[in-house]
Image (cartoon, rainbow, N blue to C red; front, side, top):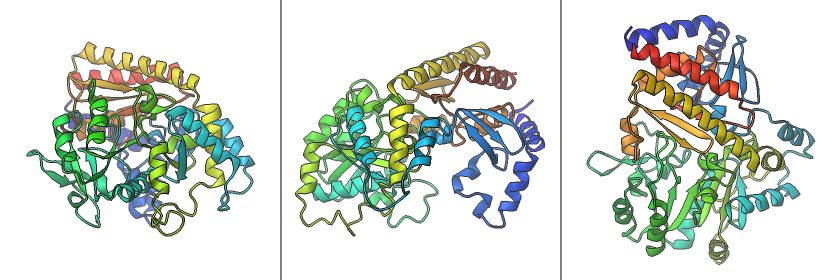
Amino acid sequence: MTLDELIARERELFEQTHPRSRELHEEARSSLLAGVPMSWMAMWAGGFPLYLDRAQGATVVDVDGNEYADFCVGDTGAMAGHSPEPTMRAIAGVAGITTMLPTDDAAWVGSELTRRFGLPLWQFSLTATDANRWMIRICRQVTGRPRVAVFSWCYHGSVDEAFVRLDESGLARAREGLVGPPVDPTETTRVAEFNELDSVEAVLEHEDVACLLMEPALTNIGIVLPEPGFLDAVRRLCDEHGTLLIIDETHTLSAGPGGCTAAWGLRPDAVTLGKSIGGGVPIGAYGVTAELAERIAAQEDADYEDTGGVGGTLAGNALSLAAARATLGEVLSDEAFERMTRLRERFVDGVEAALAEHGMPWSIISLGARCEYRYSPEPPRTGAESAAAGDSRLDEYLHLYLMNRGVLITPFHNMALMCPATTEEQVDRHTEVFGEAVAELAA
């Protein structure tokens, strides 16, 4: 069978086994744009998304009664697993959801993030996007510089300044399909290529970049790991050119309890976080060094407490912080990350064995508890290489094949993430189904 024929077969099977999800999706079109409550949910393969009945641990059950081993876990939002008992207990016991008053949970979470990441002072938002936006504002304020730097094919939530990449000739261009930017992002942002130090130097030597916002490994274009010495050299270049370094650990928290910052001994001026630290309850966070905190405090003309563009009514609410305290204190522990990483190793071993058996020239890249397969024989070293290794038709085939046999991976790409509730049996189920999918494709 051709790839198109395999996809058609899997689409037909998907429709046959998910009639209630399809029915609910059609009904939702009368009240929801594109029939989904959030636009990204339209990206699931099959023509309509699965509709959730219940989720617990690393297992999801849809409204048609189909059960899945879930390696998507809400695209890392449920890194702690679905509905972890300590988090649910904390949510049920919270005394007031949002009051514009601090609770002792906030200081506890701040201290725990200091222990994990080494930065002494923290505040909270509702998303990592907001944490990134606010840190960009703060960096512009304290440096007096107008521009931001990012890496090509990066992802930092819906931050306007980050939707820009380098084209084939090395020129900065807005990302294709960018919706209604207030200005062309090339006016606000300079762009470097990941793992290319000359590119970073060329961006920073203009001396107009307030901050470099970066993931320590690219994640949203497939995992692209830093080459040895690259991150240390980036830190040095930022110091030489007076640019503040923000490390976004929203996805790279998979590397361990303190993300790549702790695992690799990084020295950022600020760290941003989101999603997973609340166990599924909306939250974001940003932490800064003592030196940066002093510079912030010295800005007497900056209105950080009211209408200066930093903060929000629901940020730092009692519910989010209670959930984060329980999740960090009892679920996403040091021991949990060790087990999650061992399971990821088992997952990777299964994928590599299937690829070798069938002579498939793909690779799989790992970052702690997270991994992702890419359609290239060697792991990509830049965002551009990883983008070139994508194939939407292969994605559709694999996602449908896995879903039709009880396995979920992230719909936007081929990421799998282990959570504390993931079992060896679930990992082995993926190995079995992935091997069958590759065998059919190879045939």
